[in-house]
Length: 164
Image (tube, rainbow, N blue to C red):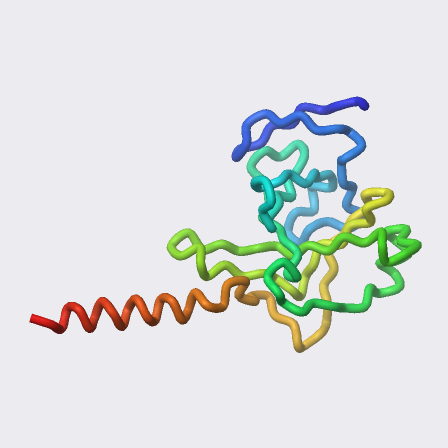
């Protein structure tokens, strides 16, 4: 298999198989100049991957499938997306959402369910969809119990500091 060495800001030089290059038929919003990416594992058995731009070392998105976090997530693929991606069966479809991880509190990470990345696993054609479902959000918490944990820790520390 022919390989390609790509530069990445996070991982340094990475060698990938050319057959693993994902071609975006419509760009990720705001990144019109980048049409080729690859998926890199975050770590073994991690629910996260990196959608790394090829030719732009500093552009990589953390992505995941919300189902890893028990978030019910289903939508109908628009017919034009099915055609553009060459999808012949549901088994060919990979769906990822872009994850936002706040530096100050990673436990409050969110997934953008309104703009999933859809990849045809067979031909590696991909696009970011913009769904018009008002029931979806751009910021769905992946770890909803982090709020409760922080509230408990805050209450405990204020209770402890009140003793004296």
